[in-house]
Structure formats: structure tokens, C-alpha cells
Length: 271
Ligand code: MF3
Ligand code: CO
Ligand code: CO
Image (tube, rainbow, N blue to C red; front, side, top):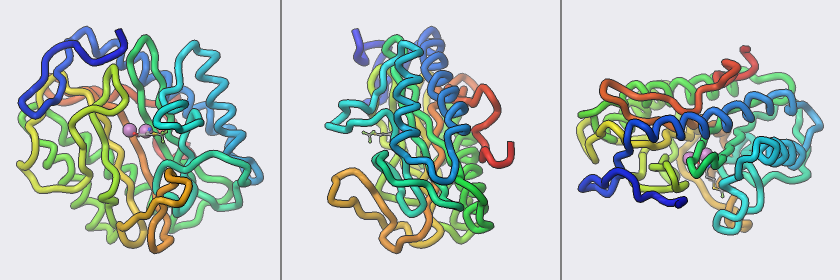
């Protein structure tokens, strides 16, 4: 039965999973992260985003897993690949990567009915200094958000940790997209905002599963969606970066389901 009927729902409609459910999430998250580790070798100047996506689709199949994105609301690809000023939901295609391009690759797989959702940043060729800073700040903002995950804290605490860190670096947090609950469905309550005030929104409880996936822009936070109905870009054309982990709340903090087996989650250019 591939739907969320396990455990119980909180007053805010957030599902509380059992201890045993963590194992399923770890298996799905690990596969998504392992595929992103392998993808690093596919990134080079002249490579097309379509070829990268084809590699991901093949690897998901070889592992007898299911791509959560193929067929999702009409989406046709095994990944979203968002280059430079694309904020998220970039559609893979025949565009070639150029020297200095930065890109987010977002993969969601289903293993035994459990969803593993993660994304990280890559670079083709030589990384510019301002891109490196953006990528570092975005990565670190996700980790600040994750540090705020523990029972008794609120979703506002997570958003505040991310927003205050990013804005202190004079960068901006995208408001138009958010993280989400997941488990045996792709997107479930709550909306995990990457901005907010301490102590606001729902209280975290052990057994909640959700993603944190901040998008950070060098310029202003506003986005627009292109006529393909998917590709979200920064309105001011400034560079954007994103990192995403799937996590589960434990008694005293959280477990990250999508840790990189190869230690390649942190900007790959430094590994
Ligand atoms: N993986 C994305 C997320 O983090 C969702 C992609 S949906 C798609 O929620 F259809 F665009 F692939
Ligand atoms: Co997600
Ligand atoms: Co994702």
C-alpha cells in the first residue's frame, strides 16, 4: 500500500511515523544520495543536462527503484537540473554546460514505497569566486536549518535559522518554494518555509519526516516560472543555488536520510 496511512496525524496534519519506518527512509535516501555522488563524474563543459538526466534515469532503473518525478504532474524526467539563474525545476535538455556554470541536480527515488528526495550543487569547469560563496552559504544555511531540528522546536525556528544566516551574508532566501513533508508520498504537510520567526508555526515531534531545501539568490528573492510551466528563474537574473536533505525527527535531534555515502554532498569541487 503505497500511501501514508501509518502512525498518526498531528493537529497540524503532519504524520508521525514509527521507529521502524526510519529504516525505509534511510534506504531510499541513501540511494538518491549515492546516485548524486555518481553524477559528479558526469559534469563537464560541453555535457548536456539531458545526458545527465539519462544517466540518472538509467541508474534508478538499475537499482530497481522508481523515479518519483517521471509522471509527477506531467513531469517527464528523472531529475530537475537548474543551471545558474534557474532557481528550481529546471528541465533537462540539449543545452550544453559552459565553463563556470553552476547547477543544482535534484533527484527523488522511491524504494519499497519510501521517498528519498535530495539535491546538491555542481560546477562545470572553473568555479567563479562569487558562485563559490553562494554555494557555500546555501549549503551552510541548510545545515543551520538542520541543526534546529529537534522535538519542541518549531518550523519557524528552522526557517529563522536559515533566513538569518543567509541575510547576514547579504544574500536572499527564495519565498516562492519550500520544503515539504514526505514519507510514503512525495509531498505532504507541512510546508517547510526557509524563512520565519522563532517559535512560530507547528511544533516538531519525534517521527516527523520532511525535507529542508533552501534556495538562495545572490540578488533579490523574487522568482518567476517560464512558459514551460516548470522552470523557475530569478526575476533579476541573479545566480541561485539550492541544497536539499530529507530528515526524520528523533528523540533528541534528527537523522539525515540523504547523507552522501561518498562524502560528496558538500560542494563537490572541494572533495
Ligand atoms: N524534488 C523536488 C522537490 O524537492 C520536486 C520536483 S517535482 C518535479 O520537492 F516534477 F519537478 F520533478
Ligand atoms: Co523536496
Ligand atoms: Co527535491
